[in-house]
Length: 215
Image 1: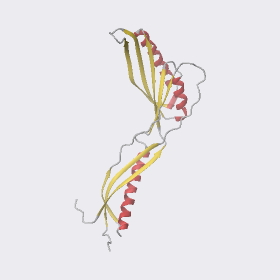
Image 2: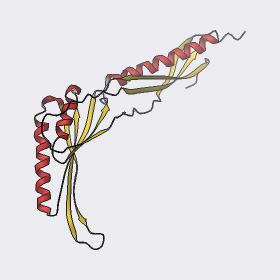
Image 3: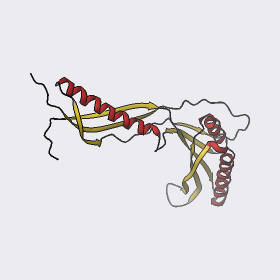
């Protein structure tokens, strides 16, 4: 598109940190025995115990997904003689109620042969924070264009082009691991501090400006 007026091209950027909206953690139940059937039975029992605890967590758990089931033989260094069988099953849990997060993770970690890792803090893909950052980036681009125009004794007259130039948001995480021992008794208390999530947006914009005063 031909443009007769002078043009200024700018990049608008926005960065903010907002509280997370989701927390994810992984629960892995394991079993090991010389007998394959015994290993599978123990693994199924421990996975079922995890499910019972998650079922009783109420609305705190927004989603859970079984993502990794492994059963493998352990052999001697020489030959194929099986000396033991190992089994594990991992469930990823998504929590929206952070007040119940630490207690739930510790209760799961208190189960026999269960490992808990996480949490990983995130924003929802459709979080309003993303939209707000994009709006801020556009406002920043317009402000920069006006500043350049004013330095030339001109003013911004119209928008020619606006393009998204922002990098994809990367969720930040904090990781901890708890290995259950099945000791029983009252679970200890643990406080978790949700990690602020960075939200970024950037745009490329081209504006026409009035004739500058270059006197």
